[in-house]
Amino acid sequence: MQLADDLFSIGYMDAGVGRSFGRLKEVSLQNKAGLFLTSAESDVSAAASELFKSGWPSDPTEDFSGVSLLDQPGENTWWVVLENRGTWNCSKAP
Image (tube, rainbow, N blue to C red; front, top):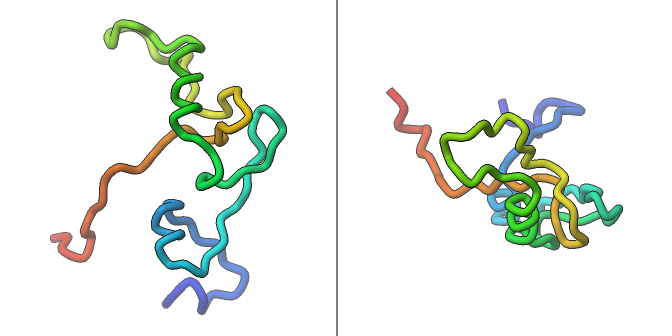
């Protein structure tokens, strides 16, 4: 069954994969500055820079439990700082 065959269903995919289809629309999320942006309109690097200013531990052995990757300040930041840098071929799974 495909997602299109299931009435009122919602699917998720990485934004880059969705853009590669060319005909799918990406959701705009409201950032901390109150602006609605898609990941393509935002600056992920700016969000990461803000993250490093706001309490990223300088030592990788320190406690990261207070670090949040979500909703960093800045007009061009997107709500989610994470980026997908890998691809997997699941069709060859054992």
